[in-house]
Image 1 (cartoon, rainbow, N blue to C red):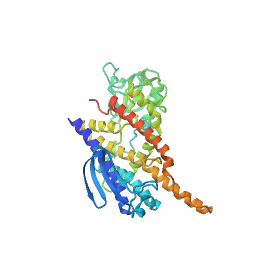
Image 2: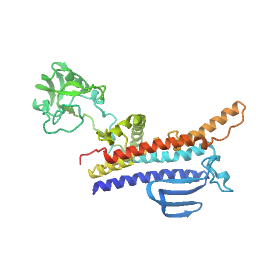
Image 3: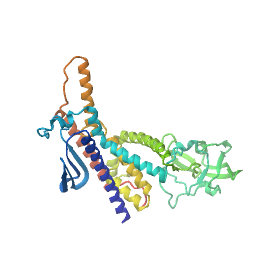
Image 4: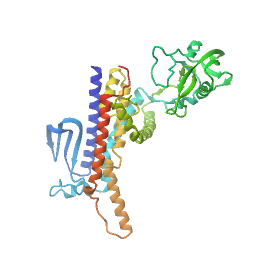
Length: 415
């Protein structure tokens, strides 16, 4: 029951976000004097509506988004009534049209920032000083936590019956021990320890450590495991030695902030998200084969894109496991991604309209400088083939992700 509640709550949060996106377009358009005739939540048949002033507001039967109708978005639109010619959107200065068209993405960014600020002052944001990958751990002190087992094959999974016990545990090393040398080779950081242990042949080795300020040694039978190179996690695996330990963090993984300091922390975290989002978008074409593999019976790669269906399922898992922080971070990530994606300079996305508006402005400026007549507005009808191609590709990709999320979904928690 809690899983279903989480799915519904997350789907509702997405619907509200998209509705506010359209409200951003509507409010900025009205503020500049443009005519907005319709604002609806959902698509399909109208369930309920009312008219206030010149705008009809309402709810439609298919809750998969929303829309607002701004009169005269392009010169080719035939929805401008006599007397409203001056209020057609395309006639307004390019900076005003840019604000109106970007208001949807700005709304998504605002929702993400507000949620992040609340998280920062309530439960804390990830500590920027705490590394998030094994490679990032290299500068941390070699303070260990005993792993429950050793996974011999190169697999990111929990321990199972039959997995060999941790060599460190069998040698009676303990959580909090700081490794200082392996077979006489000095170790000062986690990275040093990884390099030295992997380079040591499997079998008996002498491990020097410090416990409660006192130096000591232990004889450890290093296990042989299959791992890729540390600097290439997707490279070819080979046999290396393992101590059977994990990093015992010396710094907290999350940091709570005061109301004022949270603004700076939110800005820093947003910058990190921007970089991660850019990298994720660049990898989308490479992930299409992995999505198809997941649909046809292969293992689902956790790094593959997800649809609204997949995000809602993850939201349901988060609520089911009382992981509300995961729920809200999913909400933040999705809003940030939608905001960035919607600004791509492709029709029919808002970014495509913005790109055309500035192209027209730049072209008019250039023609004026070289003494040629202004070529006027871009003919959107000539761009329709490109627009249809983008819609077709986007629709196919959406169908692919939805199918993968139904047949072989990504999961965060074992159920």
